[in-house]
Amino acid sequence: MSDGGCLFCRIAKRTVPSDIVGEADGLLAFRDIHPQAPTHLLIIPTEHVPSLADVSGAHTTLLGNAMQFANRLARQYQLGSGYRIVVNSGAQAGQSVWHLHFHLLGGRAFQWPPG
Ligand code: DGP
Image (tube, rainbow, N blue to C red; front, side, top):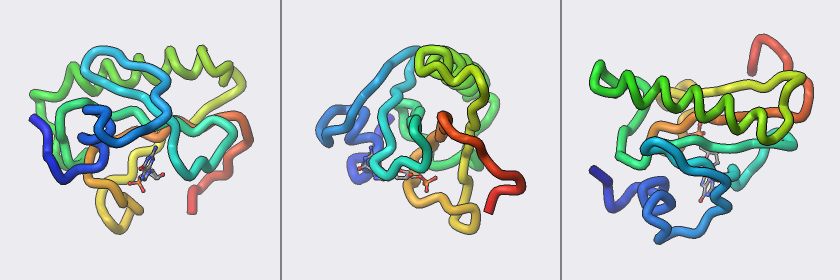
């Protein structure tokens, strides 16, 4: 299912242009338009899921596939010295696009705790 008003659904349908870097198992990866690291990719399910707070047991395989996809992309982008996966779930956490997405960030050192 997709949501016609959802930006990332439109990216998944290619009706909004993006720099797509990979596709696998109902997932799409593309470059973040405002990169926060030398490598900053977004991994999304092609089906519309608003946020991590909306996932259920029905999404278990999708979530596992997303982590394996991230791992493959990290190898492809030579992030062997370290990378970070971020999910902002909810407005207070900084979620701004209401379609589940995993940020894959790498190519620099990161601080902890995050801001
Ligand atoms: P979040 O704040 O966690 O919901 O992350 C949303 C990300 O989406 C943010 O890092 C910027 C990115 N973004 C917003 N609009 C677009 C767009 O039109 N194209 C691409 N490629 N990325 C976008």
